[in-house]
Length: 588
Image (cartoon, rainbow, N blue to C red; front, side, top):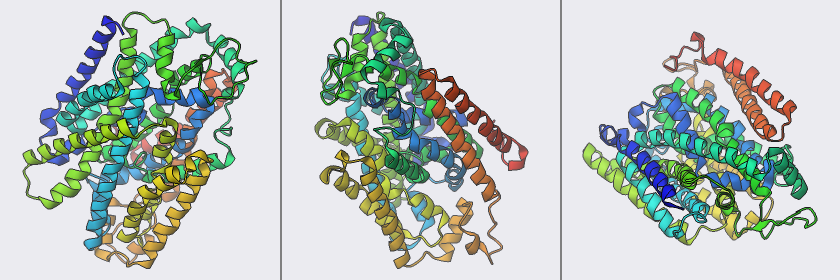
């Protein structure tokens, strides 16, 4: 790091902070509701870009996956994302937007009644806040490891400096500030990463030479098949099944994603924003990172990689942790003056975008589902003060966990994205499409989810076994337990269910309930058509994923096939959602 690097890093970091600060006044206009829902004024483009930006969490995570597993590493998350993203866009995004609530915990008070709904809502809020803290700890620790090779600072110092900067603009601008900063940060991330990739490809002999070197060292990493050593058939099948339920995951269809649906201008903006987010998330944002990860395969190894010395012509540098791959690649490259500062700024942008969203989301539960319930007459000014204090407290707790407890990055990546959320997955369907489901089932999922995930993954050491074993067992336990408890306990009252149906208008599962109740209107859209749209969305996302991996090995047949899937499926979706027959407003 030279003086020019420091200047660029400081200028870009302070510039993004200034953007967040610009929304201080608007964030405080309508109290905590405006602070956490951006005054329900998000457009599809800001929703889509900011969602994709907050999913990023760190450039190093994707570089690490490709470095360790090759192109197959993408299927560790693609297998779920190409399914849940279009499902959430077509079915769940509209329901979240219609309900006009502030947090996903508030749904519990709308969906259930009586004392048990109060208990379930507050307990859910506590667990979601803890989940936000754990998630922040993971991305914070990863960020520290990623930039540690480049900055002459200790990991705790890195976390404190950049975390505090993020905290300042998050406290000031609320969700709107977080979203607008995320849009800018996505531009910084893409520009910096693409420039980095194009600068260093010639330094390592050109792309053809890089692919030839990979084929010599670790040829299995060039496979485009979704089925591989890292994603064997049962693991891939498990991920696909989980993808059908990820509308209930705090890392997917709920959580920060649902918060943005609640903040959308209209149902149409929620749908369009999610599809735009899918396009950016599945392809655009990772294209430069896949290239960088591929180059890392030709340069580095870790102690536990079994590479045939006869294949590894030349010396591969051994790095202590695969999370260091991105930073080590920067050090191994011949870059213009000031460019290292730009690259660190891109990593800072990825980290702070996710951190800001998680801080805002986590604190919303404390304020909306605890403080406001205890102090319903609290002034808007006081609500904003409490919102900002809880946001700061969440960051402090997360930083301490990151520094002292988070270590194995790959294990934590899988734990956060696939394991810890499993008990909540059935709720995506039970809440919305099964009138018999009740607050007891909701509470059971919340009480058992986090401790059982920790028990299975870390204490019983399922992290060292095939992924499908731990996730599959947890998922079956979750389904049986949550459904069984709901059936063994009293159903919700008709009055509560009627209120929920009128606010949410679920597209299926309520036909028997609304029969004989003429004041309850049936769904306005055909369920058959929505299922067809979901299939089109999944095929479009699959095509995007196929084309993204294939373009790196110049397999133009797969690239063309993937793009053809996108065009055909996209045609049916645009024709349906872009015409007056849907009865909705346009995306203007």
